[in-house]
Image (cartoon, rainbow, N blue to C red; front, side, top):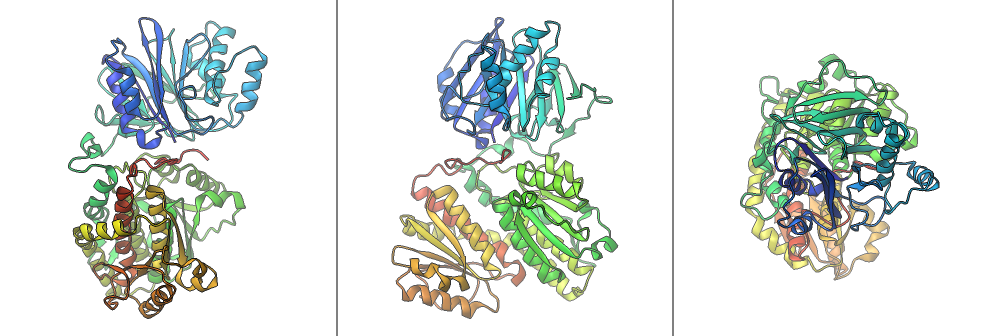
Length: 612
């Protein structure tokens, strides 16, 4: 979950690297560093802390260099300090390496190095790579940098996205991928490399995504790809054009990305729905899933696989599929799926859900499904991502770049996309045209309904400020409200650090009710469905024990029933979870703001989880 950037060309490399790291900081912000070749020597600058700390340390250092690599770290091996910051070098300061991933046999490799007399100075797995690459040159002076990297990686077990810089090959970088994302950017007489297009889109939109097991050698005006077997690719890999541009990553009028992305949700939803609503047949168009009507009718079950917010979105999607298509559906954490030796049913449609399309647990679940003959599609927000390529077809979320660690617009677009999938599955079965038309019209109204919720932000901010001082909070939901409650608790925990737990309303009496007291607020999710009376009863049970209640609802509940009420527009009942989620984002955001948290970069977390 680290950010990598590299450059070779004619530009002054330091501004390119520092700007790239700044745009990648959501992938890790424990420490940062860079290495360049200047006047025939390797110059390395590292620091614990943020990219701004690295920028301050560099100051106005007059370094002349046109090739270099940089890294912003989310720590896995070793404390987040300056010593363990990347890049890592060999003893002679010839080789520099930046790496995202985990080398699983690192202890064995480190032991072999120390037994051979190499002095290791860090606690990281990555340092071993720099020494091993240098050792390949000692064993074979005629080796190319590509040779040395490939021979080293043949000894490695684990995942990596890495870039290698060599003082004695000052015109090239060698890049490799296995399980961690790496993208090449093609410029005019210059080349870029990064773990995410965010770092390079300011300079080029022509990119090449490396596949697992691929190695690339890049020069200012040339590139070549090969495999760990040393077999060159058949012809040059063709670049693709990314949709994003540099403006998508600018804050504009907002102070942070999370609030910006919350407010981008109406337009993001409109993009997700554009061209996908079929009024003539009251259904959805999802050509990307590449399934004909007969194949859709043969699906007997749908299972969503994701992690974190993607998992909760999958729970909402499963409920939609069961309601509209009347076939069994559920969701499961992708991180658990492959480890429990799952029974893979050929009549089940598996949906792999990931904003980045690089989530390692979800990617591994996809690979397990394919190995066992499962039918799997992706639901991702990044074209060319590993999960998108591995699945081959699926649903593109169209949320636009999402930078804040806490997912908002991608989460909402996941839910909207799953409503489209459920509608499509329902209409090839027994969902009537009238019901299909109702859902189509309801989906079309959703972006305006989100606009209405966002217009009440000040009211929600006031409520959030009132309860931000609580040490613990409950989020309570029933049926449609249950996954919404889980997502709401997740948001509050990850950006405000307030302990929050989600419970199904009916489960309160089976234990959690013992925790209710005046210092424990409960957020109760109340859709406009047949369970409003039961949800009102839940509020009364909490209030009878002195617990404050924040109601989030589209239903006509009595004024004064809750201590605070957040009202949202009434939508089609099946679609209301999409709307109910939005005020919870604002509630978490403003609680975190009141507490002075670093909202875009919550402690211990990173945006894209690319290591287990």
